[in-house]
Amino acid sequence: MKATDPADAADVVAGVDVVALGESMVTFLPTRPGRLADVPSFDRAIGGAESNVACALAAAGHAVRWVSRAGTDGFGDHLVETVASYGVDVRHVERDPERPTGVYFRTAGDRATDAHEVAYYRSGSAASAMSARTVDLAAVRAGRVLHLSGITAALSGGCLDLLRELTAPAADRPMLSFDVNYRRGLWGSGGGPEVLLELARRADIVFVGEDEAEEAWGVTGGPGAVRALLPEPRVLVVKQGAAGAVAFVSGEGEGAAEGEGAGAWSPVAAGGPAADRHGSARGPAPVRGTPAAAASASASAGTFEPAPVVDVVAPVGAGDAFAAGFLSGILRGLPLRRTLRLGHLFAAAALTTSADLAPPPARDTADRLTVLDTGRWERLRLGPGWTEADPAEEEVRTP
Image (cartoon, rainbow, N blue to C red):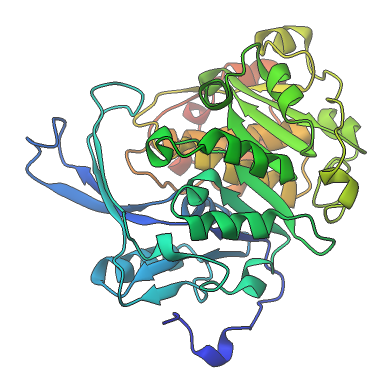
């Protein structure tokens, strides 16, 4: 059954900025370091790539809807209530009385190390039953931007068919944001890299890690090589971990990278997706920024923006937070360089907490930091609690 009365199922809230569709789970975080076999207790939280983006964007003041499915169990109640507490519209989350809400447990270690353990209990979950028949497609397509990720495509055949339908070229399709989010364990030998490449080539805005592109598609040679593989998206963001990120922008308005014509480059400001955007390859944008920045990015084209130094507590959720920050910058019509910086700041908020989901910095704090001159931005160092500091306090930044 649905979370809303059937009479309201077709209702579309006016002014929705972003709709995010995907599975979220209840996550259990250990109360102390150690193996899952040794940890005696866990704290409960929630985690899911798309719901993380939705919550961060809503906390930043945007109108956001999350579409998914959850069980009618207590975990489903907690999940939906928690997402709603961020100000996200959850009226189109369906509740399934026959399938459970997914849960997972993880250790306190870094996911990138062998010491990290994660145990997923999501097989047969309510969200894995998402399809074009079990979600309200009008509600999914109601926003200025539709945000999806490759995780959803791996959950089931029905989920993959749904993503293919939502990413199909259409004149009235929302601006499509796609985070590759390659998870080898979810795909097994099921052809995940090929599917993700197919979906990414249909999107307008794509997020992918440089290391992720190498693992999934064997791409080496830096961000420029990733752009060569993915020339179709109007905006391609290649994340380079602690170093920073490179954004490639094709089409009109590329001059906004340096700040002139704040919204001119924005794919949202430029209108909906056009048919030629999905049927023809565009070359990469010219290099912007300092020569040193471009060289450090190992990119032959694009706009590189370094990330601030962050005292990392846990890396989980940083990619989702970056996507939320970048989309926030697009929705606000910020110049490309400030949009990249906003992505870095949202990511830093996630990196300096232990949970998968962290509130972003206040807008006035973020705005002050995104306009720092290059030298002060590159000297910036952010640690735990920085998002709660007074914007005037010097510890938020390095003089």
